[in-house]
Image 1 (cartoon, one colour):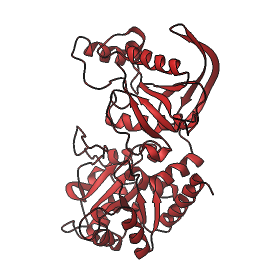
Image 2 (spheres, one colour; image 1 turned 90 degrees about the horizontal axis):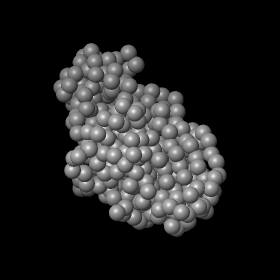
Image 3 (cartoon, helix red, strand yellow; image 1 turned 60 degrees about the vertical axis):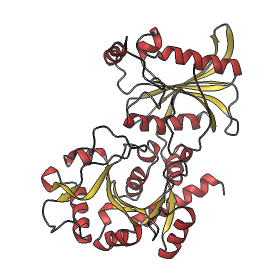
Image 4 (cartoon, one colour; image 1 turned 60 degrees about the horizontal axis):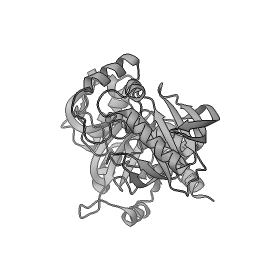
Length: 386
């Protein structure tokens, strides 16, 4: 059985555990937090489950929900400027308006969770602050953001339940974070199934990829006097109006390190070389390197707000100002945190379609791509653009 197939099997086993109302241990990748969470479907949570998490998990017990449910409950985000390196999307804490005493007991917290996820519940049914800590998952789940927030929601949804989960980080008895062998022993002791975010990604890619090829063509492309055969691809996604244009030169295999540029598009800057740090300059430098080596991939990601009016305003608002550090046309450096996550997951699927595995990433940004190995990708080198 291949490694991918093994991951799909593990994910299927975890989904069945969730369907039966049991917990699983959900782990992320070593290049992210490298930790494990207890996870279960929110609609099946009982006081004894909260007590188990508090007693044996020892971490923060959180409720994971989709954005539409967060909006329905009228919850504000905990901060307006999220500086978490993992873009963990905490809202304000909550309590059920009725049916609780102090709010902290296992019974009170399970009641708050089940009240919050009730399809009929809205802002009238919860109050803030409280003893339950909601997390807003990204639309698209682990195929957009490879985190346990999205993983727990995906597990519940794939098990046929409401898309909401309860998670709790697992800590050792001495207060340190449980990792690797600690988590294996924990699962053996408590007879729990273990599943990774990578497993869930592989499962979902196998059953429901979120990017699809809209068009492709092979044409001769001339750049700065060099002519090479290039492959052009256009990808779309059902979760937004975003489209991705990809150009591939040469033979690309997962085992071969290849030049890759993930470019955040801004039409006016890219076409006319206007407004602050030039996207056109970055595009030209990326294509120059790819043409010089005869092999590489450039993915042009449409801006989420890429109307001409918006692009015009953004371009000329930055005109004449000091250029910010980093690379504003880079998928990591130039987008909002939420949009970055969307770019990561969807862009990763585009790269996998193009047979990319090891990347020599052309970027001036030092932004880390947390969880990218879950998609079978690895940044082996960062190539600066002058």
